Length: 214
Image 1 (cartoon, rainbow, N blue to C red):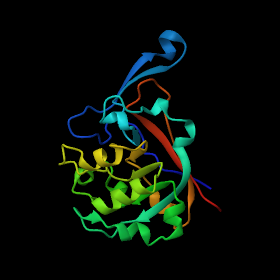
Image 2: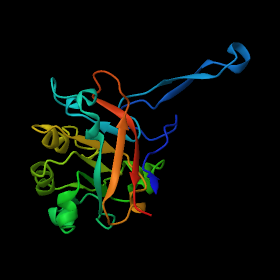
Image 3: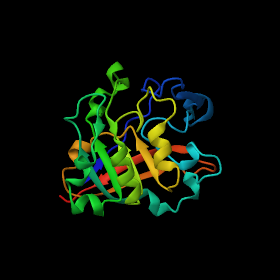
């Protein structure tokens, strides 16, 4: 079974504070041109999207430089929906999954925050990774980390501390604004998040899906 983990891109969607929402401009119409075509203008980090190390560090790898298998692999959903706002995900929350956590190539943190999508609460004080959890993910050489919140860093952290720790010396990706992680269950899934294939991609919207056994 395939599960869609991707939020819709729409003019009224939540975007990172300080950026503009996407714009959909009619470029061609049935009446004038005989076909419909729309000009879409948006930031590379709009909606359910992927960050590359080049997002924060000049000269580092961009999404278009990764081999395509970087964007697919075994994913594990770590249930963090019970954590209070503003808390840190302890390492034990991940390692309690044992061999599944070690085998996973993507750690997907389920906070349940996607239920707040489209409301002011989505910009609230969501939980984030603890230093110990970040170090474990790095040491395990995971392909990526995914979250169902606006970012791996708190919105108030303009320094993007967790991003920088994850990317400083590692060729990995971060996927933000996921949804429906609660539908995957406790077993490993095949997680795929494919970015647009454009040059110098510091980030890109993705279509993220999970393939699970029926």
